[in-house]
Image 1 (spheres, helix red, strand yellow):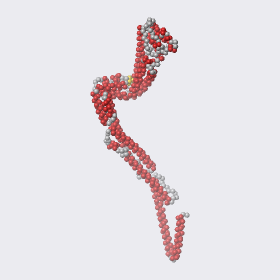
Image 2 (cartoon, helix red, strand yellow):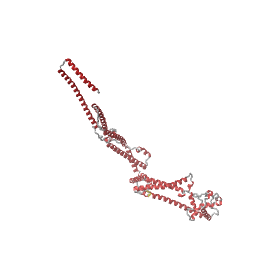
Image 3 (cartoon, rainbow, N blue to C red):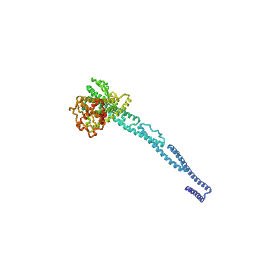
Image 4 (cartoon, rainbow, N blue to C red):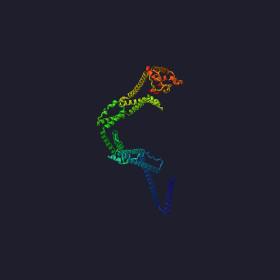
Amino acid sequence: MRVSEVHAAECGAYLNRAQVRLQDIWDEIGIPEEQRVQRTNDVHKHIKGLLDLMIVEEEQLKNRLLKTIHAFVEELNKLCSELQLPPFEEKDGCTILQMEKNSRTRLEVMREHKKRRMEELKSFIDKDRELCDIMCTTPFCIDQDSVPSLKQLETYHAYLEDLTKEKKRRHDEFVTIKKEIVECMDDLERHPETSFEMDVMCEDGEAFCLSNDNIASLKLLLGQLQDHKAEKKHLCSALRSKIQQLWERLQIPQEEREAFSEHMVMSKKRNIEALQAEVQRLELLKMQSMATVIGAIRAEIALFWEKCFYSQEQQQAFVPYHDDDFTEELLSLHEAEVRTLKMCYESHRELFDGVTKWQENWTLYLELDKKANDPSRFNNRGGNLLKEAKLRSDMQKSLPKLEKSLKAQIDAWEEEHGNEFLVNGQKFLEYVQLQWEQHHSEKESEKLERQMKKTKQTQEDMKFGTSVVRTPSKRRLVGTPTPGKVKRLDCTSTSCTPNSILSARLGGTMCQQSSIQRPPLSASKGFGLRTPGHGNAPRAIDRNKENISHLRNTPSGTPRETSRRRLNPMSSLN
């Protein structure tokens, strides 16, 4: 039993006891029945009124609680709608007081959520306005009066993070561009002229509006300054090149050049003025020493003719080169020709370098080939003969490869430009073929000249009966005795007549032809030259075999010559 029920039972018992006591008092007093009834009604009315009043007050309390609960529930539903949360639902079986407490607690939580969201939204809006003022962008589109959802706040926060990164990127870009602008203005010795330039130079990065238009204007300003700076550098470079060229042509002393060296490095305004003044001074000197200057230019033209492999016809096409009337017009023509040659050389540098390399290798090959035909090469020491032979062999292999590579490059160039690439007025391969043909022709001429000399010497020997011992120009066969170990033929003896010499030579030729079929004489230790009486005939045979072969109209490639070629590795290259 609840305590309230116990108290109610006690109140009823107390009322009964109070009524009995009142009856006893009334009996003792002797109050009549009419008054007792009246007094009992008064007690009843008093108790009833008091209880009714208490009931009304409790009913009012109940109604107030219900109204409060209803208001709380309505506000909760509204907040849940604003916060985009599920609606509030009260649990079943709760009393009015429990419902009021639960709704009031839930409402306080919802109000706190709303407050935090609105505060967060306000901070985002303030930050957004600050960034928009700096970057001149449009604020984030969001209702500032309604409660934002969690997703909206997350989106707004991500947007502000991206905007902050963009602001930092633009600020860094502004700082970098501003630094370059300041450097360019210092180099150009220029001060800010427009309001925008003053804002860039004077304001810091935090106060400068980092809009896309301003960043684009910054880049445009930097580009203009850099172009102006490049123009100044190009102007200075052109002036310095002109000065260097005039110095060389006018042969200006080194002391004067060193005194002017300060202006050959810097590109300030005063340096440009000094360079221009120096050019004017040198131009005046050039006009005063026209002949010397034109002579220097002609030397430069001749150098470029050599570099560009100009033919004689191409060189003669520049008629002013041979004009001795030194005028300003003639100087201009020479300067224009130098510029044309420079452009030609620069545009074909790779091809000219390749042709130059081939020419150098060709010249080296000709030198080695000439040394290979020099009889004195056998007297060299230190392995030079083998080195030259190896180098000559390498040249024979590298020249065709280089010619093939150059042909591919020249074909590509001709296809691209639609012109022919000429070397000394000829196509490259024709030029190379002509060089080879001239080389072979010269070798044939040298060979024919040697044969004519031998023929002439043989005729003289036969006519006068003389025999001059000549040093052989090629290696001997294996087993052939050296000249120092064989006695010379004594032509002064009474038995040595022209006819006997001729007979001996003819006999020696026959012996030589028959001896080729046998192994070399050096393979036999019983060599027949030990006897003095038999030593002169082989010597005479060896010395005059080519002359006898010529008299007999035999080919120059005799077995003796064939043996020499086998022994001499360089003879196959001659």
